[in-house]
Length: 440
Image (cartoon, rainbow, N blue to C red; front, side):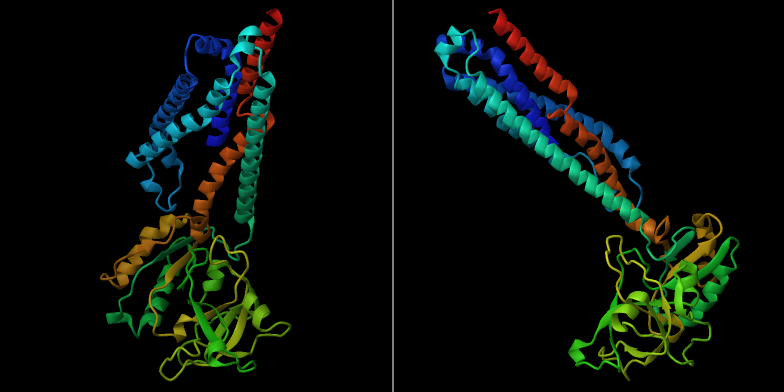
């Protein structure tokens, strides 16, 4: 945008030079050196640049606080945005460089004016050279405008697809939050604590389902774990791996992740029951192409060096794929392990599906935690609009900015300069010059 605007000013200065050819020729005839004329014209363009920079800084001081109010919460470092010393210094530097660079071309053109022919022909000399330069500037502006509009359009299209594609779960009416359970008291009793805790959450007025997960989708949070497949033995260093999540009973129903085959984790899947696991559809397609994965046994965590080695687990279900981040293109293979069969883990995100405004249940959920252990601290919401809403907020801000650029872009393309009134100014200047030439 800056280059297009500066090119527009340069074009207007070039158009203005034709009106001033006789004036500059008279100055040269009276003894003014070409260097002095160039300095004068550069001083004029610098004045324009400094005036534009000052107006821009003033506008930034006024509009930045208003713009920050429009940015939704959850955008990283949004509160740090503002106009400070480095920003003002950069603005001054850009204003000076713009004034010099885009005022130099008209100044050099004016310095090359032929004195004799200009005075003799009443300022009508070297018209073709001026028109070629102005045409080159216009072509450059149109090219930049097309690139700007195309880039903004692609960004907007990508955001629309991002906002409307399926994430594999339903984030509406979901409250998510987390808290820490210290090892000193919960190292060996976390499954029992969370089982009672989720039962109390389900009993809250307005709560429909409650469950937990170590990693929420659409939060750029995940972990990878290797596993052993007895049907496809490989060397220890070449074992396949996949994303892994530790979830509680009813997690898939709470997040509305579809169960494609088999069964969900049950309350009876505890430490005394056969070890089980669930995989997603991408895992089944990747590691069991054309086969039914149900009943297959894997050893998640093989090669981790755990005492006694990890247990063999039977695949009892296949669920739909979910995205781990807003920018994830392809669904990745993932394993789900039941928290009730894993005593040594820490800290789950609580997920509550509600029939009311999710945030209205946050105080009641805090009271549930306090009623079970008043020493638990660090209770915080993971987001205010579900995992998907929090993940796409930075993209929403960028897309909003791109929308403004895109609305500006077509005006650039249609006009050949920046705005129609500027084009009219150049055309009017040219018409006046031709009228003056015809009259002379």
